[in-house]
Image 1 (cartoon, rainbow, N blue to C red):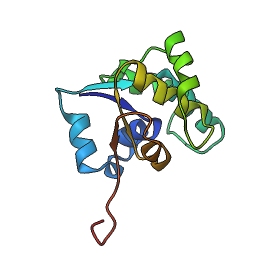
Image 2 (image 1 turned 180 degrees about the vertical axis):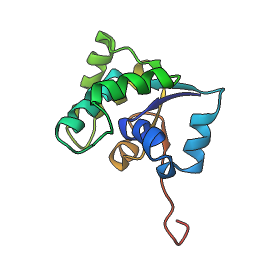
Image 3 (image 1 turned 60 degrees about the vertical axis):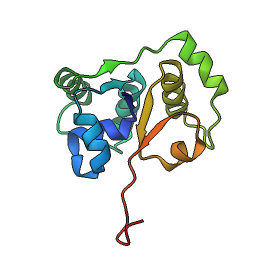
Image 4 (image 1 turned 90 degrees about the vertical axis):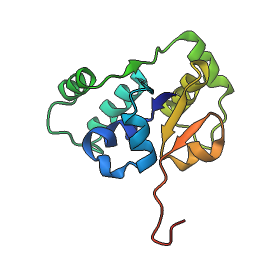
Length: 138
């Protein structure tokens, strides 16, 4: 399976893997799966660090460089075709990062790994949902 990690899934996999469901963790650890990461996620993480919504234990640029060296991600190209595909993406919100991730998944036929309920509900692309069950098992 070819998996495109949403930005938060990428971060959780490195910083707080307990937030990943067993299904998602197993998919990320499966050597038969391709793990893709978009440069949009790098950009989004830099923005989140600048806004202090994410705090890393190192300079964000250095942290990202080290994280990318340590992980076996395939870089999802940010192409003209991807940019044009964003015009066909219909999401209930105006997050440009999400539009680019959905467009990337469509163009390269990837499954988006996300916990974002807005992306899951939008049904714009194949999704591997990271949904935690509540105490009643639902």
